[in-house]
Figure 1 (tube, helix red, strand yellow):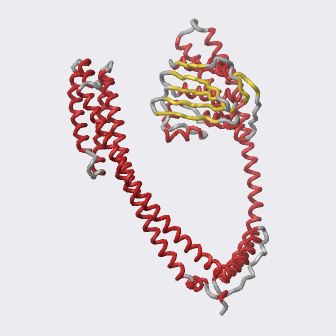
Figure 2: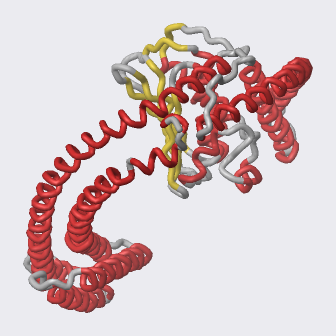
Figure 3: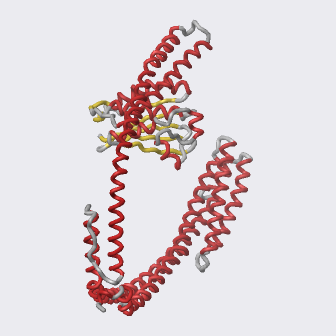
Length: 508
């Protein structure tokens, strides 16, 4: 029997003895690596994590000190109780970190128990001083928490004790690191020997397997490449009794099946192209219909808005307050409906790819002044302030003014809509490569996990937002797509119940 006809399994068995040698050498390297990992794990768990806990304790103690001072300087009962509540929270965190330290660090020399006892004593004295402040004796209470007072002195001693613990943990981590370096040096020498042995053995294996595997692989690979290039009649000519011979036969059978399937698929593709053309035509008709309907609605809406506004101003004082409010409602709802139609028009143009840009040079300050003037009545109606802090000199940029105006108007309208009370502030800042326009509000804010959703079409933060504040969910989506069309982007910072800040960043 020819060696080329020998089964691949038997050919590989011939090299098994050599491979076992490599395995033994690898096992030695693995054992050394495990030792190094064990040392590193000990360093991380027993020293570095313990140091992190110590730093957390120091931070929480400083926070307790700050909140305690807020309590003593509180101007109302609510502020007093809030400071107490935060102090108690930090106290629980410190106690938890001490428990973790006691469980994790069992080696002598750190005096964690002594520091914990000192902390408990400090807390107990502070509770007595808290009652003194609650009784109205603020000055004596402040003197006690000062650095020279008994509470302040005990606090500084406690922090000094924590610093000593941190030093001990750091020295311990350094010792462990030194041991790891020694193990690594030993491992490196052993791996060099293993590497040399593996290279030598690999060359021998390569020469042996190359003769018996390379030829059928080349033959099958050549047929496969020709088949991939489009020659569906390509077949492998390699014939043998081993696994490669079976693989060659399997490839030929597969190629024949694919050739038959491809012919059927081409017929189906022709039919799909016809269907795609029909779908594209239907989409164009839908877009055209939306555009036509929107244009037809804008004309009567503009008339309704204009006439209701004129009537409201001319009849002010001549009709009852209820009748005056009816006119205001007509004008306000008409304006809102016009904004929705404008959103649909913008969305329709973006979807069809017909939106174009016209780049000109303009003053950004003047544009924002105009938008603020236009939207200030909405802010006044809600009882919130609308501010714009402009730069001293004109801020000239080159961009599409219409799309910039649309983006900023959407951002400011959103800020006013979702701000029940407080203010909306607009600021601009110029940088060498870009210009930032920041719209910051004191509104309801957005949860971090929901921020990516607000830029999706027909989506708001959640269903509750849609019900309470209305809107189609297109405003921010259109603003972001316009910003990207201008080569810029929109950045978002937000916290629930604290407000949001949307930044339009445009290239200069």
